[in-house]
Image (cartoon, rainbow, N blue to C red; front, side, top):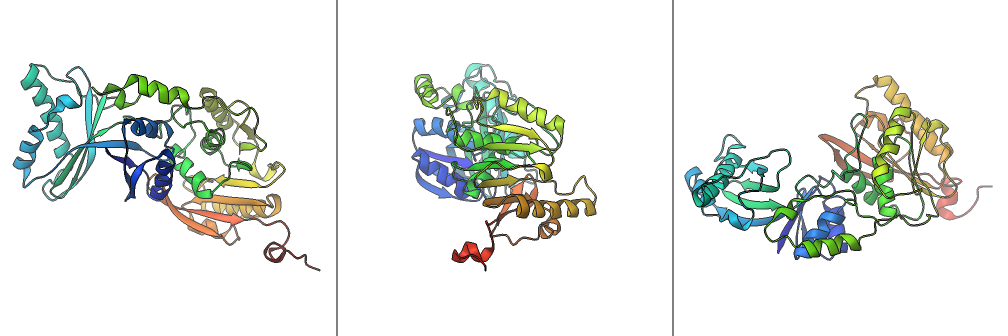
Length: 386
């Protein structure tokens, strides 16, 4: 069975690696998507386990069309009984890139009408459209005169894990946060800290990884559960075999900190829905006052970019971030996500890696700063300066 997983720009190879770990075959990364093949078991496991995917699609009908009339005719040939019954609610979403349609949402309206007409003609009854929480979600993709109709097996986006009850301003997307952790190559054996943790997304995603708990452990529903061929026993077997409890003890620390006491309360509230026990902690303190735990580790932070701060304040902040790295974090790999490239310069450290990532609509850099113990000469050559 051919399958397609959607993701964010810059995370395609990360998602491909996740799929390989799950046993997917014929993996082909594309632009914001990864195509692969697998059976129904892999489809269910992908929804439960993929940390960087937005959704998992099953293409069910593809065709070439000449014009609008031909497009409508070929939609009318689809047997929608295979995918839903008249009592299910549904919705249509997707992307259209075609000169045939000046209004890009028009083909989705045509698909919606085709589904309604199919059931009305066959049963004298029509299914209900539900844009917010449909049982069955169709995905329509048109590139010029080629069309693919897919079933979205996930329904609500997979980054909606179900644990985030409250957030601060501009929260980091959960799938993006997981992608940043993968890109950092954190070994899940050393300390992980975020000194601008906000509502806690990065530390929570790190704790889920470290404990081997699937990202969707708190989620109850997927669209594939409403399909006619849903295998309840297979799903229960997959879900019950997944670790649902934290490891008794981690020999390293996962810590999130923020200077805002209200946002720290939100972070602590968010972990209540997850079985993370004492493997994660949140502290209310300014990053300049943060005392890192003993041992080496990884820091990943998403500090303010400047949208709600004066230019000079943001430049001063990034200068203080650089000083904090140099003075407080020897032995750490420090990663910063930001769209403010002028502010990056004020860190006054040379990044060892730069990766382009989108945070929402913002093009950002994800930069790594290696903070060595001792001097650079000592680190590179293993000798102490006299």
